Each structure stands twice: as structure tokens, then as C-alpha cells.
Length: 308
Length: 309
Ligand SMILES: [Zn+2]
Image 1 (tube, rainbow over the protein chains, first blue to last red):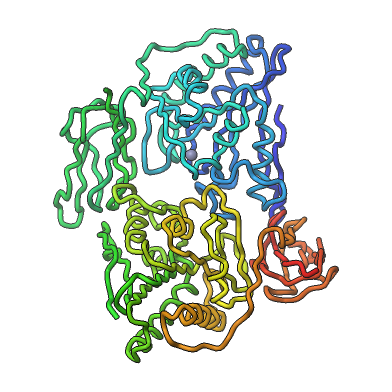
Image 2: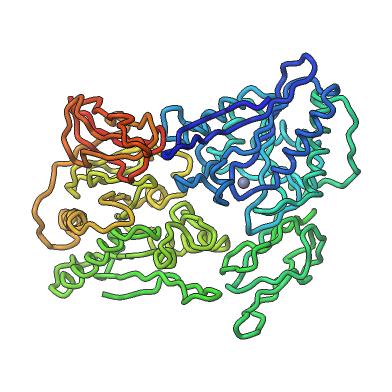
């Protein structure tokens, strides 16, 4: 059943509505939420929401509990290929838990936050940005690692990145929920403005596995065995551009590299020369690779997981 | 005066990105003034340009105090201003959300790092700032309530208000906050509109900055007196929000005195011109902030009124 989570009037004959689809089976009132589309330029979650919604409705007899799917937390951003909320030039994932007495962006954030509170689990699906391509990964604040890492592993992702706590991240949706005891896992995968189908199917299987282990689903789950890495088993190295130019990668994302092996080059298209050969700083797995070719000095080119 | 390139970076297809600073006087790092950090802060850039012009004359007249160095950076982000974009042209990041910066990080983190490296260790830091919502403010000094803020010194600007605000998580990445953490007395000055130029309001800001430097005996340049500043916090503000979306016509501006029940603005039906809502003042006070764009959404903060009891 589709319902409104938040609604607000726009100036000219239009309402902004944030909707969710509630899929309910069995007798349990326990709730599991999938949210995506906080960043309007990240679309990988669209395919996940579609597949999951379709699958669960077809297998409703195997469902026990409430599964709420929120495919578009920032509808105006998705409509206009805008990362933030267009009218405010504001990153929606920096204003949670919002404010019921604030401006529209804040009241919307607050309505979403209140709607999610108390769920058994919230999965917040992100798709990097238009600049970087990511392998499927779960990102967890070190403060919540003990609780969340076991759930994260169920999601069938390749990598679990436990990151430092930072003040600026305190206003994310995940942090706001986790800090009041509603567990929230952040998935990052793929690239902005595109859908990577095999990542979508793999994450849906992971979500079904987690649903099964939390008692929301009792059907079959199709999971291939793969090695999962947790960032605490090694270190994450950042590789930033040393100069400005056009980046031409020589590898695909998700490859194990040897130290010194070529990842790509930064070239000058006007003069036809190579400005920088980008090489791996260590032996490790390239789990983030630049997707947008134009780079400035400092642009992130790759992130490499170096296993201990 | 010494003109310095504080940061330079080449671009695939544009001219080199350059941040230019102007140093006056010799000696201790005393005052740093930063203008535009976003591409629409033209008022802020203009104010700095006027300050550079006046300081050149004051320096030639030998009226900068011995042992004081003043740095002015009129624009820390000329690339965005040249494209008329608010944030960094390629990835839409905000340099003022990157402090204290990271010299091995992303492009705008590197810009922030280079800026902060130059700006830190000054005794006083003045930033000409702008608000993310479109509107006009009564000129004021804004300070974050970090425990390090110094409202006594802020009074030397003699602007009508000193607004002390509780920091939010994202404030920890702003220049003002990091200045304070690094023991610089930091002041953000809000005046005028974003993306527009109001030379009268700019004059007020310039007077205020010279009043401050004169009171602190950094320059000798007597200015006429300003206001006895009133300190306000969020507790003094009455927020007025729109209950309807539509076309917005306002009847009062920032700095207007209003009585309880005064008509402040109307929201008009965009199809038939009917009045959808009349916004009345909830209290007696001074309009501190007024939204100015012609359209409003539901719940838009259209006025902030400082209540007068
Ligand atoms: Zn995102």
C-alpha cells in the first residue's frame, strides 16, 4: 500500500510528496525499511527498490512483518539531477533529524526521520556520486561497529568500511537513527546517474538474506559465496590526482593491484602528452575508481584496500 | 602593500586558479579579512576591494600601526564567481565546509588547507559571509557559541547587532569555527544581499571594519560612530514562516520596526491573484531578516523578528 510520508505545497499548482510502499505479510508488526534517493543524482537504489518490491509482492506468503520501501527521499533532486534539495542548494543528508518547525527541507527530513524511528532495521542505499564508481560496500561508523558489522555482512556486499566518527557526519540520516537506537546500515555502490544491474540483483539477495535472518522472510535466498573484506583487516589508501587534466583509466573497478602497477593516466588532450601516470601506491583491491574523466589537482582517483 | 598569490592550481581548460591576497604593514599577523568564498558573494568582494583601496592610502600616509600586519583576500573562489555559480564549479562543494582543509585531499579541501595555512595565527579574523537562504539581514556580526567567542571585541564594529548562535554539526567545518579553535578571535559579518550589490550597505560594512581596526589601534583612521551593538541569540528571535506556497509580496524590509498585528507580507495565488495568506507580525520588534525572493514554499522562514518587550 502506497502512503504519503510527507507532503508540502510548491508555489505553482504542485505538491511535493515523499511516498513509501508498505508490503505486509503474516502477523508480525515488526518493521524493516529500505530508503534511497536522499541524493538526487544517485539512482542505483531505484533498481533495488523495484526488484525487492516486485519480489516480495510475488512471495508475500513467505513474508512475516512490515517492509516499507521509500524509493525517493528527495523527489525534486531526482527530477532535476540535483544532488541536494534544489530550492535550498542543501545536502539533505546533512540536516537530519530535521526540525518540525524549520523550513521545508527540515520539516521533510524530520517527517522521514520520525517515520523510520523504531524500525528493526533501516537500509539507506547510496550510489557514490557522478565522479566515482564504488564496489558494493557497507559503511559503518566506528561507534556502531560492534552492533552493525554482523548485519552488514549479511547484505552480500564485497567490503565493509568502518570509518572514523566525524562531527560533520552527525547530521546524516544513519547517524541520527543509530544514535537513538534504530539500527541503520549505509550501502554505497555503483556510480551516480546510472544503474549497475548486477550490483542491484546482488544487493537484493543480500537484503533478502538479512530479512531472513531477522525473521521477516522465510523463502529461498540465492547467495553466491564470496570473500568479504572488513576495513579493519587492513588499511584504506586514498589516491588523489597530482595534476589537472583528463583521466584515462587502464583498469576496471574491483581489481587487485600490485604496488606500482598502472591504474591509468592523466593526459593533456590539447598537446597530446601524458601529464601523470597513476599507479597503485600499494598491493591491494581498488574498490573506488574515478568514473568522471575531468580531474583537478586533488580529485580522488581511487581508493585501495590494503590487506594486512 | 604586497600582492601575494596564496594558492595556484592549473585547470584542464581554464586559466590557472589563483587566490590573491593583499598584505599591508609589517610585523605580527594582526587582522585577516576574507571576502567572497562562494561565487555569488559579490557584495563581499566589493567590500574587500574598497578596503584594499583605503588601506593603500592609509599605508602610504603611515597610519598603519607599527608591528601590525593586515591581510585582505577579496576572493577565495574566483572560478565560481566567473561562472556565476555559488559553489565549486566542478563538484558543487563549498570551500566554507572544508576547513581546516587537508593538503593531500580533494581539490576544495586543498584550497581550504592553503587558505587556512595563510589565515591561521592572525589575532583577529573577519569573514564577510552570506546566508544560504535568500534574504536581507540587518547588518550584524555573527559568532558561533564555541566558548571561545568574544562578544566584547565584536562591539567595536558598532553594528546594530551581535548574533551569537549555537553551532550545528556542519559548522565545525567552517572558517569561523576553525579560526576560533585555533585561537583567532573570529567575526563573521553579514550585510546586504547575496548575488546583488548594494553600495550603501557596503559602505556601512567598510565603516564597521575600519572602526574595529581603529579601536584596536591597528590603523589610525577615525570614522563616524555607529551603533551600540545589542547581543541577540536564537531565543530573542521570533520566526515567521509561510503557511502557504505561492507568489510572495513583502511590505516590510530588514531593519523596519513593526507592531504586533502589522501586515508584513502577502502570499498571492499564482493563477488568479487572490490573497492566499496575509502574514501578520506576531510581536512588536525589529525585522532582523526578510526573505526576498518572489516565490515561497510552505514553511519558508520569511521573517526573523527581534522582539522588543
Ligand atoms: Zn549519497
